[in-house]
Image 1 (spheres, rainbow, N blue to C red):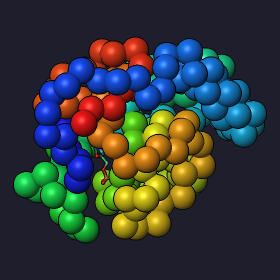
Image 2: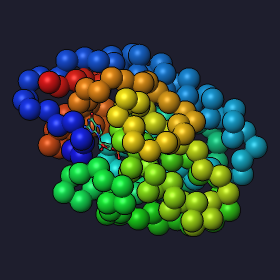
Image 3: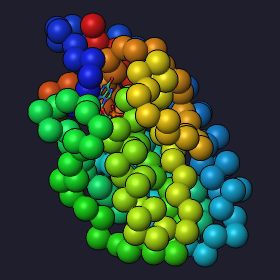
Image 4: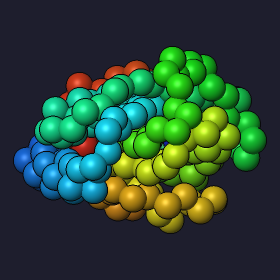
Length: 180
Ligand code: 5GP
């Protein structure tokens, strides 16, 4: 768990986005990506561990395009979201030079994590970089991050499930829940 809005209790998560709604929106996004990249020779799909994994798997299984998969893992020093303080714990293995990259993230909060990752991908010579995020806490944004494909905007609540954790728990919930 890495967030600027930590929960104070472990009350069971209350459903915020049910499984059916989640899956229906993911199918729509997959179709949109498939149309947008119809002429792409190979799409580099890069996820940010660990939270994006469930979303990424369900999304990519529905995209019938030539693609490759890789992962970053990030963390913030002291758990704080401070500009320039995002660490890359695991780097991608593949080169993105002259590649079309689709960066896949679970949730955009302040935007610092993605700002760091997006800058790195551009620095390494990616031909294009687009962002696909399942959730967006717009009210918390501190840096401008364009989200090309978005699942759902949400309020500033602490969410778990479908890959998102609280202290490593709840990732396997098939829905997005909120904890108080
Ligand atoms: P940002 O750098 O945009 O502030 O933070 C993005 C990261 O913070 C996400 O990848 C995720 O790990 C974490 N995060 C932000 N909000 C939440 C939340 O509500 N629940 C969980 N589980 N993680 C969150």
